[in-house]
Length: 113
Image 1 (tube, helix red, strand yellow):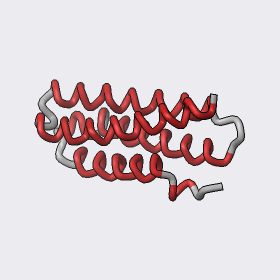
Image 2 (cartoon, rainbow, N blue to C red; image 1 turned 90 degrees about the vertical axis):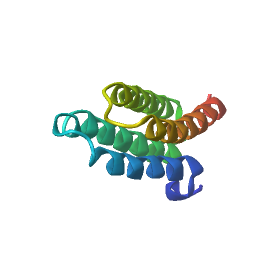
Image 3 (tube, rainbow, N blue to C red; image 1 turned 60 degrees about the vertical axis):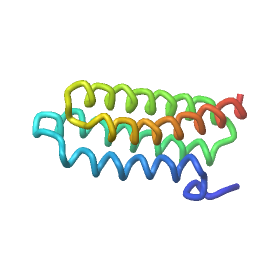
């Protein structure tokens, strides 16, 4: 079994996690402690689901949970763009990371079905 920390999807998720911490420190106070914390929690939950899926033979439920987390993250970033908390440039950059994780989770989920 591959160590979870060596999985490409885990590495991409961790990269996304770091970016979220970097972005949230620049949010207005109102959004930093609401949307920012929700983003951090969703990303952490997703990473835990990835770790757990890597250790189980039946991965479907955990991978579905991780896929739901990434969609919530995607939605929250769209909200932040609309609320002018991130620039269009940052929105595009973070969306590329989100899409990378999303595609990897979808592929892994498809293999586990």
